[in-house]
Every structure is written in structure tokens, then in C-alpha cells.
Image 1: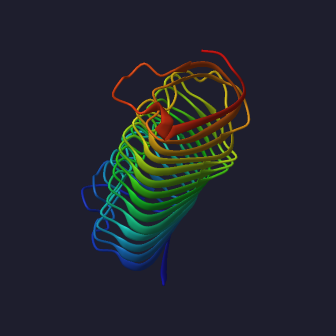
Image 2: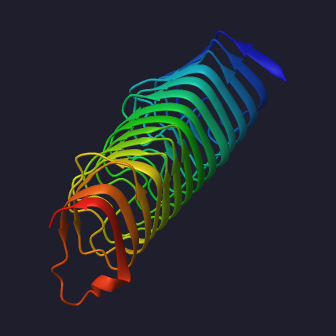
Length: 283
């Protein structure tokens, strides 16, 4: 692999179709799509300052680098990407990437990032921005710290570990989601989702966990959470804290130490179809 060291590249498609190259200590500026259609490339201690740096690329490793504000829509239609220890400062960075691993990345402006991606592993990511992870499939997440609304909308086959979400409307319209050992703070959690499981999670959500089919909760805390489980079916919720209020669950089992208010005022719902197990309940 040929090494290119301490160079400044300018102009559109400066290294178009680059391959079998190691870029080190380089700067890409004043020209879009510098590494478009590249393959078998390593990038270490580089700075990208312009739009679309890595589109339609394959087998690329990026380490210790920065995508500056201006490197807009940085990485689309790329596969077999490995990124580690990277700073990203602009929006819409990942679209349609596949078979990739992203680790130790800070995305300071993560609006509309990670859309329509498949088979991606996220490890130690910090991101701030709305609509992170839209319409993705087969994503594994460990140690994600996300601040921004509408996370993972419309995604399928998502597995999350040891993460923190400060986001309302997270996991809407999803299918096959499992969240382990995580904290989730925000309104309207997981509406219109099928097959979602929370294990050892700490959740605060105004009117969260509604319109869900097949909701599994194991050893979870629901703090400051009201009007939960409305029109949910096939519930198996084992909650270890008081639930402020529960409204019109359709079917399943809800167990908690206490429920502040149990609302069952929809005459079309068979109350017997949902078993409520509490040590103390007021209605």
C-alpha cells in the first residue's frame, strides 16, 4: 500500500477512485467528493473540510481524523467501513452504509445521521441531533450517548447495550428491538412498534410505551411515567418501581409495586384480557 503523507488536496474529486493507498496527515479542502469510489484505502490523522468525502467507497479504514463543519453528508453508499477515534461536525454523515463498524466517535451535529444503513456496529458513540438512526436494519449498539429526538424511527432488528437516550419519540414504528442496561428519558417512547424488549432499563417517559404490540419489560424502572401502555397488546411488563398511571392496556400482564392511577375507561377493551398485579393500587 503506497503512503501519501502530509499533502493538501483541493478541487472536485481530488483522489477519485483512489485505491491501495494510505493517506496520513493530509487535508482535503475546497473540493467535493475527494475520495469518491475509492477502495482499499486507509486514512489516519486526516482532516476533511468539504462535502461528500467518502461516497460509494469500499473497504476503507478511517482513524484519528476529523470531518469538519463543511464536510456535509460525508459518507453515503459506502460498505466495509471501519472508523475509530473520529470527530464529526456536520449533519447527514452516514446514509446507506453497510457492513461497517463505527467506534469512539463524537458527532456534534448528528441531525439526520445514520439513515437507511444495514449491518452496522456502533461502539462508544456520542451524538447530538434529531432523527438519528432512521430506517436502519441490523444495528448493534454499545455505549451510545444520544441527545436528540426521534431516534431510530422506522428501524428493524436493533440491539442496544449500556446506552443513554435523551430523546422523545425514540423507537417509533420499529420492529424487533432489544434494549439492555440503558437509560431512556423522553416523551412518547416506542409508539407503533412491534416486538420491543427492555431489560434492566431506567425509563422516564410522559405517555410512553403506547400502541405497542408485544412489549416485554424485565426488571425495569418507570420513573415519572404516566398514561403508560395505552392500547398495548401482548404485554409482559415486570416493573420494579411505582408507575404513576396506566391507561387502557389491551392484553397481557403488568406487574409493579404500585400504580398511582389505573384508568380503564374504554368500553371496547376487555378488562380481563390484561392482568394487573400490584401490591398497592389506587384508581
